[in-house]
Amino acid sequence: MTRKVLVLGETRDGSLRNVTFEAIAAGKTVAEGGEVVGVLIGQNVSALSTELVQYGADRVVVVEDEKLNQYTSDGFAQALLAVLEQEKPGGLVLGHTSLGKDLSPRIAAKLSSGLISDATAVEVAGGNVVFTRPIYSGKAFEKKIVTDGLIFATVRPNNIAPLAKDESRTGEVASLSVEIKDLRAIIKEVVRKASEGVDLSEAKVVISGGRGVKSAEGFEPLKELANVLGGAVGASRGACDADYCDYSLQIGQTGKVVTPDLYIACGISGAIQHLAGMSNSKVIVAINKDPEANIFKVADYGIVGDLFEVVPLLTEEFKKLKVHS
Image 1: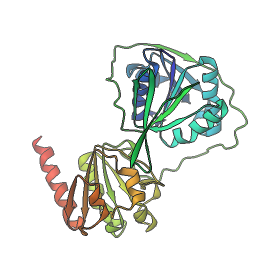
Image 2: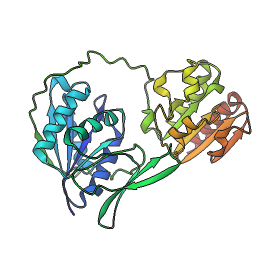
Image 3: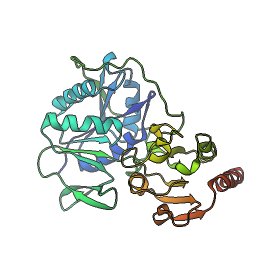
Image 4: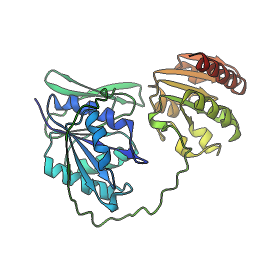
């Protein structure tokens, strides 16, 4: 059954986030041959329409307003609801990001719609669009379908492969004027506490530290390794609680959920709350002095040793490999 599907394009610092392209790929599956419409909300975002089309959107609807310069749930909800009212789609897909997790339940409530959140896969089987999502902190997976109404889902970053970029694709770009009013919160300034570089939630490589790093300075070797591998630095709740790093780096049940190609856990014991945020990584390497540490139970490769000795050695070896590659 073909259907029209809307996909919200999420931006950061004037660029589209990678999860947008993954959501378009998911939207293509949900559409089952129907139309995929990209949606851009913000200020001065229309220039990004071309990239949405090149990654698979058939056309794009843009809502621009100075009140949408920074994300607010009130403002973006008003804009997206207006697009939904105009387009009347059969499906809606967002990234399962901080924005998506905040916006999607508000939209679902307004529409009295169901919502499948944090999907890691989507397929068509038995005449239904089937979503796979983790449950019980990633220990099991469930498959869900929508039996009636809007097929509404958020997709976890780094799980659904985006379509290949096709610079020859073209599509219509239309603007929709929406009056944004009655905002309960207005963001005057955004102060970024996280370090610049690769987005942690979308990183292909994550180097993560726990209490074993012992101090804020203990994260420096991890940052160097992450820089060599083009990755991001993360942390356990314990490291954040100890004030070794900012909570924006926290990975776990109450932090970010990451699924990189490579996850290197340094000085992390492997508490269940932390495992919930990274156990679905493709390859897990654990470095810990305690051979009985719980992290080794989920690791593909384990190194028993002092991270302050092991991490610099790894960094030097990776540097050599990069020079000869």
